[in-house]
Image (cartoon, rainbow, N blue to C red; front, side, top):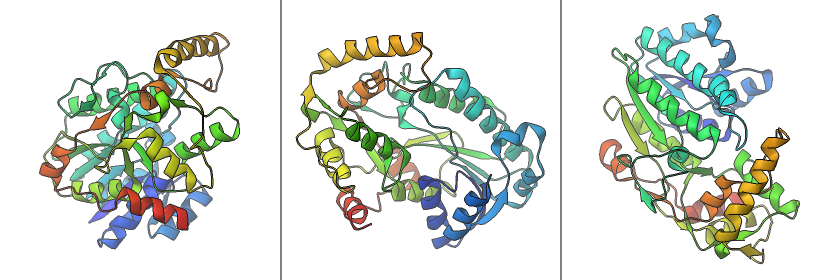
Length: 325
């Protein structure tokens, strides 16, 4: 198949390119800079110079949609802080425009990489699946991701099959953006466990997400939504102690404080940060409290049955590869 990919220069996008190329597909990857073009080309893709921010002006690069069988939309502006409108402008509007263009071009498949955090917030269940009410997510990025899903599902789709994948915390690259946030927290002396790190967290290796993407290229009916994880949840202490150790960072002896204390402190810090219109998040936020201070597992039964998904790399093997790199 010929595939058009956004976000190809990122960690997830690179893994997706490599997997698609390995399976014999041709990948045309959007690249907004020379450096991004070089990155996707090194991974095996054909660079398509352009920027999603231009999409409202119907740029010339949209012509590629008339020559591909599928679109994989992995690009997203991701931050844990900021107003909803910022993510509407940077994520929702370009995604809706790209989907409309794909439908108009009669592209057979549109695979959207969403996020499991669409249900991180008011939904307090220990385990959730695609039939669970997501509730209200507690950060703007996730609220807009959920709204994006809903808007795409409500649009006419013609012959374009929309499949939505929801991975949680993505990992597997030493330079991944979200891992850097943890590293910076440790280096600044701000890292602490909540409730001793005893709560279950769930996550998805980049290679497992890439495998799910290749399956979604040919499997699943229109409007299918699937959580995608490694299928091996562990406590926050177990997982992040091992993950940060691959960067030579020891957090096994980090301090801890109870969730009952963390939640009100996060409220005070967030209120103060918003009052001074801070562009960076405070050291403790409700997202961190929810992620680290509450059990959360994502049921991947639907991905197994509808896509035939099985994780291709185990957590232990992923950690070994990171340590070697």
